[in-house]
Length: 176
Image 1 (cartoon, rainbow, N blue to C red):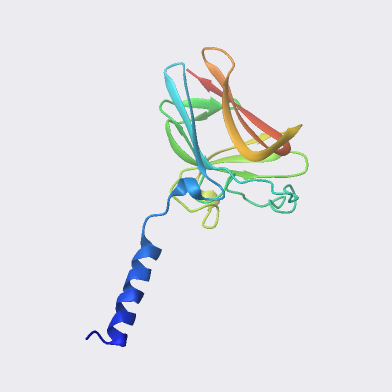
Image 2 (cartoon, one colour; image 1 turned 90 degrees about the horizontal axis):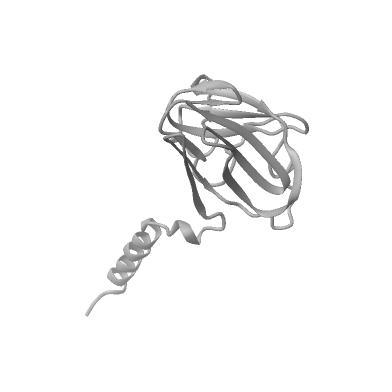
């Protein structure tokens, strides 16, 4: 006959295994999304997790002003360029970057961090910045989920556009 303590031990091990099993990221409240555009022989890829408004006040509350934000949810939002680009007229080498922002009531700072493997902005260090650019947000139509789009302007230029709640933020990417 199997003892109760033995059965209890087996149950504890089984629960532990379930807890450490890989999570289906698609079932998260903020599911992962990948957006890609090939332009001028350059592949631009944005990977992010897409949170919802859920009736919350976003700007200045859930996402505080004047603090570094991971620009999404869960893991670090990343942006990759297969070839060098110019962002808002400033040179940025090919590579993958952590995409952070510093939201403000007027002008935002968009940060491309060489530390793209971090979890969010918790361990963000300005020393790892590859580039910072300033852009002004615009008001937009209500968007429940945070969304990135890469909008082709012509054969060499695109805009990376973030929309969430009633805000739209865009920065220009130029390929060679």
